[in-house]
Image 1 (cartoon, rainbow, N blue to C red):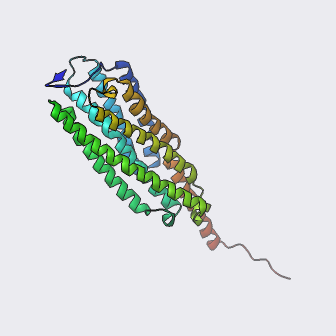
Image 2: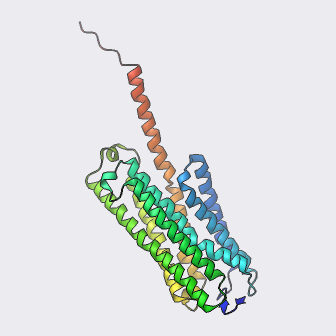
Length: 288
C-alpha cells in the first residue's frame, strides 16, 4: 500500500521469516518469564517487555506479509514501533545488572560512578532515547509525505545516536570497573562466590551485539527508503532480529538471577553459621 507519497514496504515481507522470528522470540521470552517468576528478578522487567515487544512486532509482520501489496497500517505501525524500541528495554535491564554487580562486590570505590548512580543515569538516558525513537517511529509509521518521513527518520536517528553514545560510555564504565577490580579487588570481590568476572564478559558481549544493532539502524534510517538496508528485508533479520535473539539467549544461559541468588544464599548461610556459633559455642577443653 502507498500512503500518499510514502510506501509502507519496499519489498514483499516474507511470511516464513516472520513466523520463524515470532516463534523464536515467543519461545525465548517464555523461558525468560519462567526464570523471572521463579527467581523473582523484578529488575529484569524491562528485558521481559523487550522480548514481548519483539514477539508482537514480528507478529505484525506476519499479518502484513499476507496482505501484499495492500498492506494495512495498523500491523505496520505495530511492527515498526515495537521492533525499533525493544532493544531499549534490553539495555535498561543491562544497566541495572552492572549496578548489582558493583553492589555484590561492594565495588563503588572501583567504579567511575557509584552503583546507585549507574542505574539512575543510564536508565534515565535510556528512557529518553526510548521516547525519542518511539516518537520518531510513530511519525514515520503514519507518514503520508516525504517530509514527514524525513522528520521521523531524523528523530529516530537522534534517539539512536543518544543511545549509542551513552551505551559506549556504559561500556567504558564497565571496563574501567573490571580493570580496577582485577588490579585491586575489594575484600568482598575476592571472597564472594558470585562469578562476577564471567558475568562482566557476558555484559560486554551483549553490549557489542546491541551496539551493532543500533549502528545498523542509524545507517538504515540515514539511507532512507531508497537505501539498500530498507529495500531488502534480509538485513533487518540479520542485524536486528538475529542479534537481539542472541542477546536473549546469552542472558538466558547466564541469567543474572543465578549469580545474584548464589550471593544471597552464600551470605545467608554465613550469617546462620555465625549465629549458631554464638548460640552454641564449642566446648572448651579441660586442662589437667
